[in-house]
Length: 159
Image 1: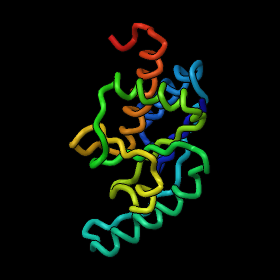
Image 2 (image 1 turned 180 degrees about the horizontal axis):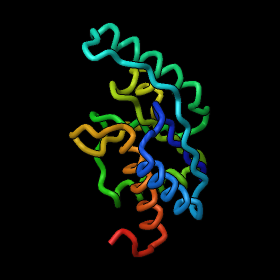
Image 3 (image 1 turned 120 degrees about the vertical axis):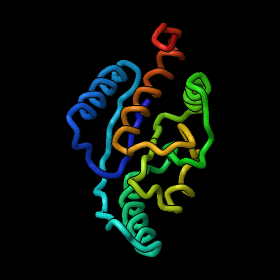
Image 4 (image 1 turned 90 degrees about the vertical axis):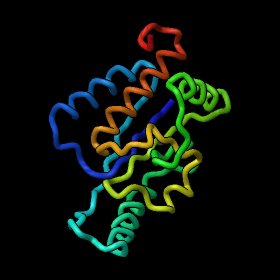
């Protein structure tokens, strides 16, 4: 299976980059994982709603350019479905059984995702009602994908 993490902005913190690299390495025995970073827009501190919408639109255009026809797209959004690790594992297994060979997970920038990206997604997914830094979310997402593959392989990591 091919998995893309399409995300806004670059990770600046070394410890987060190291964690991302570690989970990509661990996942390599199960899937080919690519992290695709698109440029983020600078958001002024007290930006208007109109400016915020324009920023999300620009970031959304960049994301949409990387979403592939035929890929199953999962958009991380606070209003999405919340799943347990076991449920995510079951979904990934089910998607594979139904012929999905390319999964794309999308993580928006600090303002969230453009509505067009959410409409393109096959599934919105929420990890919590809380908000997480989008750089940290990459690590959390990769860890959960790794956990899902370990669960599906009946290996002990998830205990």
